[in-house]
Length: 142
Image 1 (cartoon, helix red, strand yellow):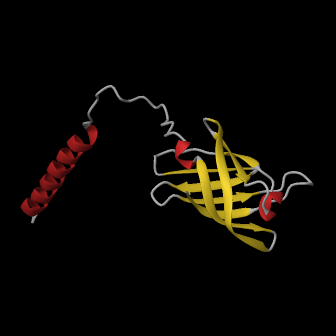
Image 2 (cartoon, rainbow, N blue to C red):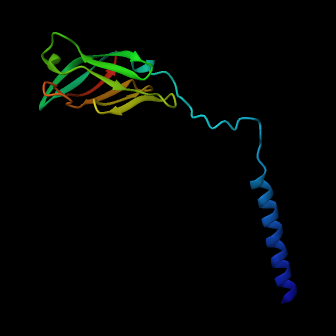
């Protein structure tokens, strides 16, 4: 019985030793820089989109929204002028593309979500002034 117990303890010690070797050894190739990844360009979301825009309870189909770049982390979303839905307030929204799959952002002005693979865009704006007309938009890049 003591011999069996000693073998069990010895086996446990060997497993613990081998496991600690695998866990404690790591490659040190000089890439221990904790600098965060800044991501990809927000340019994929730029362009003209066609879809449905909702203002209050009214839906407008085949609505055109133009997305332009303000700077490296902001876009302007603007409904096409001269249309019934043009009363919607254009907004400047925060945008980022952290891993190259899509562009998204959320701030006090609203939110944007663009999936690069399907070219699908969702925008939701928020009222930040008394005269603002907020809108919700879903569409695809043209």
